[in-house]
Image (cartoon, rainbow over all chains, first blue to last red; front, side, top):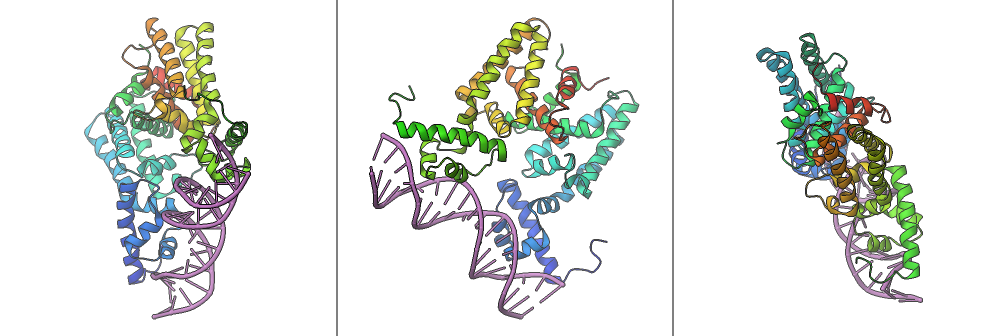
Length: 188
Length: 188
DNA sequence: ACCTGAACACCGTTCAAGT
DNA sequence: ACCTGAACACCGTTCAAGT
């Protein structure tokens, strides 16, 4: 639908080189890596980058689609292996780890759960949201999770936990602890 | 100590104009407001801005010191009015509201609770951290809060709650709900 | 149909010249 | 002692010219 006719050979080559270089650049310099630099390193004119990826967000999404989809399939693996409550918590842990350790991922996951954001309705966004919904509803059905929270709220809170953990500069060492505080609560 | 001799009259005038304009600009355009524009609007050369505030963070801090200190004194007011557990939660709510509603405040409060950050050890940072410590320890002494969390962790989690709430675009309408989820936990 | 890269606009930062 | 603003470097974005 989006791609009726195949790309011209040189266009496809450029597209793929850009994705590869972009993933490296985002990993190295974070979400604000220089676009001009990415184009140069990929050996293409800056106009070509804009032709393929009109916005920074579009490039970021394209560079990390497979990682986000991996999170989606990972959810189903965990659901098959563990009881619903544990599967959810383990998955949220992996989401948080990815948020912190994969540079550039934070803004992408953030906008995937942002109300009204463009990324929330892309393939990326729906994949993650769908996974969360399956895990949350299963946990609720088992009585392992309170019934009055919505899947997207759980994702947003997990994003908050990742943010909180980031402030401690511990490479994610606090994530499990913070997630369990969220699960068990701060009350004695 | 930092300011042995008083500023020259014109320097002081510029300093104050810059602060006033910067607070407006940050409120209007967020933490990334153009510095050049701030200097222009204050009617000073860009060099003057850099003389007074060597980094964006320094300007941000200076523009919001009083707001941060207000949060500190607010903590003591609440401690005098409410039982320890409630005082803490009410204060965290106000901190989260400020984080979301006062543009530019998020990055400042964030760096105030970031391990190893410069802002963590400024007057701003210590004021907020001190307030949190007083409230958290009082709540723990009363048994209203679990004993195995540190004040700075509570601040970081509150920052996470504010972030999560921001993703819902509700102007902070979810803050109380998210804070209570943190307090009571996600378990049924 | 797609690519290139010069051109433009904008921003941060420095520093020589000025008072 | 402090200020000014031109100058430089860097980045994002567009678009006319090229294949």
